[in-house]
Image 1 (cartoon, helix red, strand yellow):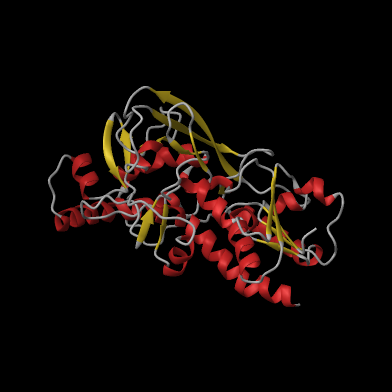
Image 2 (cartoon, one colour):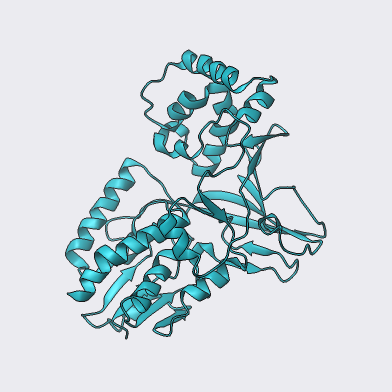
Length: 379
């Protein structure tokens, strides 16, 4: 058994493995119960269509951190893809996030940026929400009630299976309103898709000769032969699962994907199309070939229809449900970890019960290595 055992081969675990092997010069074993590395970021080529697809939904790499960009660029080159999202509401297509084009199209107007700003301010004045306490109030305070009712409310209910008034206000900050025609989804300094796919990126991250990767391996099976006491365990799975749900189960949202293949060069003309109407059961459609415009077109395409629901045990957890009850339960698990798992470092999206973009996961892993792992290894 290596001195360091990492459970989970997503970005957080893989970056830590690379740093421990390359920088600290120590052997490290990485296990994952899946048959591939990369966690939810994994991508592969579909045999039927020749299209590289993201197995667990769209993943667009973007960051404004030069440290993260320089680090990840050691393992892959990126194409020049820039993410744009569209949304369908009552059989009409609009730009998302809400921008000047969305406002003009929805209201049937031709407003300038200053006119649109004044128009929305007039809408906000009708509600007079100065201190929003939940997602609905936050959204209405940003864009007014008509735009909220059209583009946010029913989509949010499909996404979370909760009324927007039950969700915290900070969720909606991921969808700001813009008073220009700029329809880029992200404004980060760096953005793109790995030229050879995420699969190759992770293979290179874990290629060091001091890293041993064991796939199709569950920690519960290994734990029966208890790792040596001086083994440092880095756990990137769900923290409640580590303790066998002793204090209760944290809530997660998961996603189901319905795959469809077409003998067409293009299905929807965009990588992602959201569906804001409650009458449409899925939240969005991904068409993966648009992530690689630099590749030769096969004349075929692959789409995923995405459905959101609460995760059950055995499902893949995607999004933590940020309610007071869940935050309090997570804090109790953190207390339990301090008293009963002194040789375990919990991290990543699942271990920290926190939504991370890919660059957040890398940044957190680099910081964890410097501030937590290195002192532990020295001790």
